[in-house]
Length: 326
Image (tube, rainbow, N blue to C red; front, side):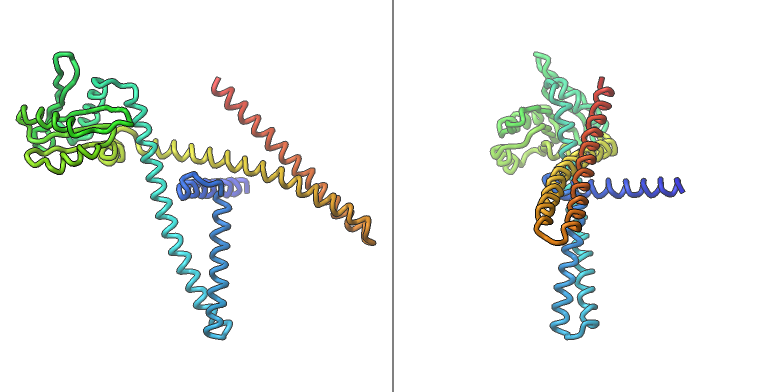
């Protein structure tokens, strides 16, 4: 019996966490509506659609039993179409959040690196990806890296790694200088890697460039080529940590909403109990009204007790977290 209850509790927790994750992915965390409220909205919308479809079918057919078939068909079709669109939006939201998490981690990794460290870091990433082989870094007289030379799909290529502040973009002058550097070494192609994006002059330069194969790897390309394939960070670990963060935020938000509702419930019970008590003095059935008022006052006391228990539970959890941190 205990084993069955434990399995049931585990199943309920798993489904609840899944609903919370889907709700967060669906709204990108920009709504206070929790998973339960969104489920109620969907059920209510489906019920309203069925009622209107049934009424419309009855008006057209003028037969209650015959009108049930078209109404059910419309409702079932709506359910599957809505489910497909919802899952599609959930998947898109999940991919967007994972992308943001990976880009934030990448930015955090390269944030404290100077140009030489940035070159060395990307050299390791490119070599581990399997796309590049034999990469060697050239330095100027001051010891600063200027270019990496290696092979990409059998072609000799030059690689430039430029780290810029996020508010700056790569211009045409930087691409022109890199192209001339590659051509002076007799390379067949060039790859310009940057942590930002290109400005309009750089895009115009690429459109007009015909004599040399120049590839640009901006932050979006780095994501699609390396980060999204787990070359730098473990995707499973990123997804697991992201899900843990989302579930924690969702539970905290649900606890906050629960406390707000508890306070409102206390005031509602007290107000109704007071109103019924006053009203009972002017009616012949005062005992019944007083009994209802007593029930409402009891419910308000129960709500107060639950609220205090929730606050105590939250304080204990915060104390445990503080002890673990220390």
